[in-house]
Every structure is written in structure tokens, then in C-alpha cells.
Image (cartoon, rainbow, N blue to C red; front, side, top):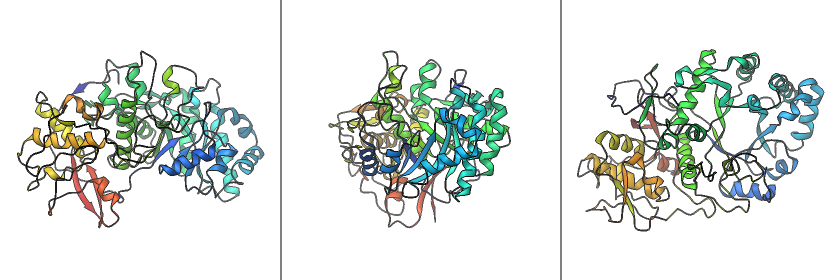
Length: 503
């Protein structure tokens, strides 16, 4: 992104084809469970913790017996790993792969729901050159699974860093590094043949940290910001995550792998860093991960693939104090080792929930968030579109004939939407940023029957009648609602959303 051209653009709403989503469940959100730390809770307590907070998908980096036993009969789906150090033995002999499966999978499956095996991790970043060992190991593990009839239930793949690309900007120029072609293309063919996903670890944090002069913090955090336009396609990018995803999609398309599913096996934001890592804070970690979860469950997709279902694993469950490197490397956790929360995160994407107590966050302390009088009309419009779309705010109260429609002005409508987002996302400075378009106030902006939310509880402003449109979160939470609400992005501009009922 260092050479990215940043523009605020006004793109006319075009009459285009809309793609209906057959289901509104959205992509899956999991959490990575790394164990490179002292005083971590025992695996059985970790399994209880994930159940308590409805974490249904967990990635581990080996096949630790105690972890596999702990997650038996929990309903949690596990992605387990074969470390790079084990690839040599497995790649050489089929009997070694058979033994690995016999010892590490069969005694625990299906009580422990193992759904993926990752063969090697970020192999292009490994100090030892194990690239040539990955595909032979994947093939042998797949053969072992096939022998016992599990090859369709447990998928085999390998994870990669963004370093597998030689170019990532603009996204349409995304290309795999030619020095990895000898193993990469056969691996992709293996994935297609066996209906396994291509796995990638994406970290907008590093792109921002290493090039903060060219990448805005809001752009990295999914917050409203100046758009980035791909000069080759005209596609408009509102966040770094989508740009990185599309770089992968375009790299795959360049090799004619257009239908291969892409899964994000790591993404997140550090909650603490070295003095020069000023963006590594709990507020930024909360903002990034909250926005990421909503982006995933809404099936927003990316500019190149609107509506694409993307599964993501958040890194990581715990801070890991034994990891080397800068301070941030040890501080990516949602929890401290004593299981207390580092910051609030709702993994359902329906609101900001304290991950320890399960309670709504109520920290507004008599403050509201409204539109800044100094914000331009275009910035307000972009921020309002974002809040009512990916921000998951219920904007029914500002629709015609509803309590907050009048005055029918952009600042008034934006203020209502900004405050709703602010209150349901911890009522902190980050949740009132909106790229500088939001400002906090201690004066209650409510008027007549238009009631602005407070204390983490989002007001519906007594919204009634046929023009009331529920939010995506409401529709997914209500089992009695007929059909479901999908957010369908219009082609050519991901900030524009239309609410459609399906089913």
C-alpha cells in the first residue's frame, strides 16, 4: 500500500445487477489458541472458556493430546496443525503419515470435532527450507485420511503469510512470488481437487506499522477513511483487509484458480507494543477485531468478490509471553493467562459484549457521539453509509415517517447513526472517530420522540410501521422473523448498501 493513491471520490449510484445471498449466516469467526506462554490455563479450562463465550471454531498449531481430549464433546470445531519440524518424516514415508493419523486423530475423533489439518505453517517464512516437503506431506496425510474414510470430513491444507506474494498493490496486480512456483501451483491443484481452502494469514497492522506515512490508521482499522482506488479496475477500497484479500484473489485468478475458496487462518491487532508501536493499544485491537467480525458475518465480501463468504480466525486467545521479537509479538490476546479480558469483543458481531461477564458494555458516562460541524458532506455521507452498512447500526429510525427522520438532513441522520454505533461499541474515543467526522458531547441530542441511545443500549426510537427496516443483527437474533435480512453491496462502490429481504 506504500504507493497507493488515496482519493475521496463521489461515484454515482448505478443501476447494476445485485447478487442475492442464499443464506445470511455469514462467514465463520474462530480464534487461534497459541500456547507459547507461561501460566496458561489448563486445556480443559480453555475449552470451558470457549464454550462460555460461544467460540465455535478454534485453531491450534499442533496435535497436543491434552488439548484434543479437552475439546471432546464440546461442539467446538478444531483446526489442528503439523509443525514444520515434522514435515521431513511425514513427506518421506506413507507409513509415517499413517502413524501420525493413528496416534493424533483416530483416538479422539469424532468426539473431538477435527475439521482441518494444516500441514506446515507459513513455510515461506521458515528459516529452514521446507517448501518442497509440504505437498508430499499433504498428499500422504490425505491418503491416510482416505484409507479410514475421513478425507471428505477433514480437509488438508497449509497456511501462508502475505509474503507468498511478490506484489500486493494495487490489488489487481497481486501476484505470487515466482520463486515459490515450483511447489505452489501443484499445491493449488491439490486444493482444488480435494475441495480444500487456500489458507492465508493477513495482518493490516504490519502494513500500517511499517508504512504509517502512506497507510492511515482508520483505513487499517476498518473505520471510515479516504478511499483507495485500484487504478487498473476502478474498484474502491475502504479498508486494508479487503485490499489484501483481493490481492490474493487476483493472484489466484492470474493462475486460473478462480473458484478456490480462501480462508484467513490468522488476523488480529496487538493490544500492547514497544514505545515506537503506538498503534498497538487495547482500543485499536478492539476496534479492528470488532469491525473484522462484523465484516465477516455480514458476508460483505470484497470489492472484487462482493458477497463472498470468508472464514477468519482471530489471533489470538491469549497473550504469549515467551514469543520473541518486539513487544507487540507477545500481546495479541483477547485474554490474559488468568482468563481475565484484555478488552471487550463480541464474536457474534451483534454488539459489543464483555467477553468475561457477557454483559453489554455500559461506559458512555453521560456522553453521546454526534456529527462534527467541521466534517465535509462527502465525509459525513461515507461515514453514514458505513455505519448503516458494515457498522451494523439499525438505521430504521432515520427512515421516512420514523421518529428521527426529521430534520431530513445529513448531519442529523449521521448524528443518530454515529451515536448508535458509539454506544454499542464501548462508548470510547475509537468508536466515535469516523475518520474525524464524529465528535463526543455531554449534551443529550434527543428531541421529541427521537431518543438517542445511552449506556451501551441502542434505542430503536419507538420505530414502528411498515417502513421500519431491522438490522442484520436483529434479524439473525430473532428466530421468529420470517426470512432474513442481507446486506447486499452494490457493484462499483462497497460503501453503498441496499436492504433486501430474502427467503
